[in-house]
Length: 233
Image (cartoon, rainbow, N blue to C red; front, top):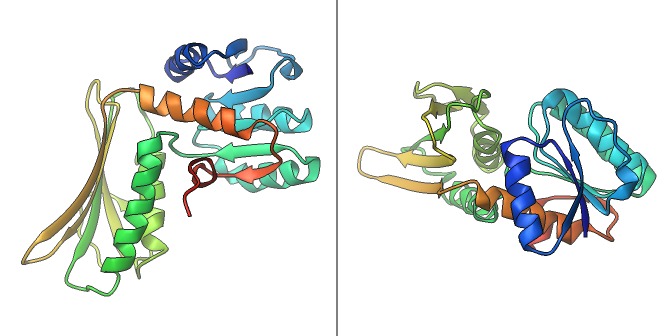
């Protein structure tokens, strides 16, 4: 499989190592302003920057090159990308986190939220910890977790900070050197606490999931998610 890496930072380089170890070829390594011929690739993996992501994705879709994206900060144009993908009969996946373990964690989070939805004595809160080079807060993964709870409880939204709220889910965001990513969801009451947690030991899990998703999407048409890749129902 010939892969275009759209974004060649820390994540792009980690994806390159995993892809080559699985027998694939990297034919494009794109930084922000590089001019490329996307048709050289069988599939594209976008881990670029918010200002480039939408252009990268639409370039792939317009040329019928399947694309998966893990870039955050551009999602105000997500619906445009989806509509273009459908119009062009192309293939596209966006995920806030490609780690296989995290995507299973997303589903556990939803199921726990459903079970806890009628237990009003429990306060819900979240914490995410990332490396100091991660500037956005809370992380896209934390926001996805919060949405999973909101969809299955009476919570109306989320807010950054540790203030206890009946209406919203407080999310504490910490930045600590050399932490790939840790996400915790708490249900806390006067009598006990329930906690689910995912801890990434390194960046390899994110890169592996991105390559697995790229392998899966080749030859398909449509807009998909990691639930499709993992066959989670």
